[in-house]
Image (tube, rainbow, N blue to C red; front, side):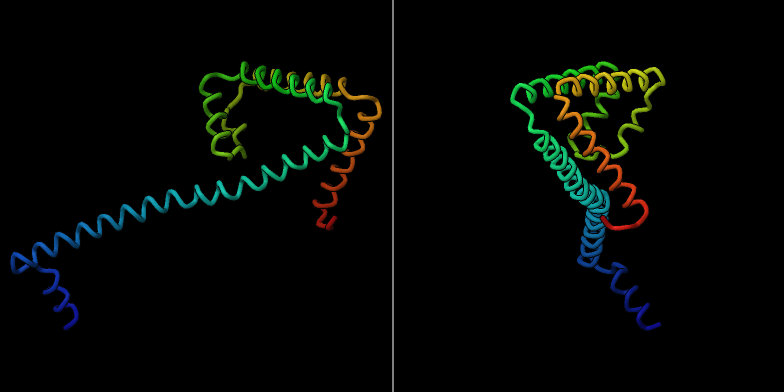
Length: 172
């Protein structure tokens, strides 16, 4: 009980100097609350950005390694890049301005996980995207020699068997 009375006396302004001290404490508390709120919003985003980039970099490295295994000629590399750029432009043309803005924001943040679902594509857009993907895949396949196509198919089967093994809980 004595502690409560002491706290009340400290907080309760009785003199002009104590009133100023009370205002300073209120300002400090307000600043502390804003700082905690900003930190609560910012820290999860920073952690998320740090967690997504290694996976993205790892996946990109795997794709580059696969292409190196195919031993593409410079002409093939140039053709693949042109096909990829064309497909990218075609995908962009299917999207509305708002959907393109969402994609760009996801690309800049590095957090692309689930962005496709957030676009709310119409059935027609989904069909167009699927057709573009199939066409792109066929064009890229035509750039490869029969031996490279066979090697790519073997790598695909290896990936699928690895995924099946991981789903069953068996290490690679």
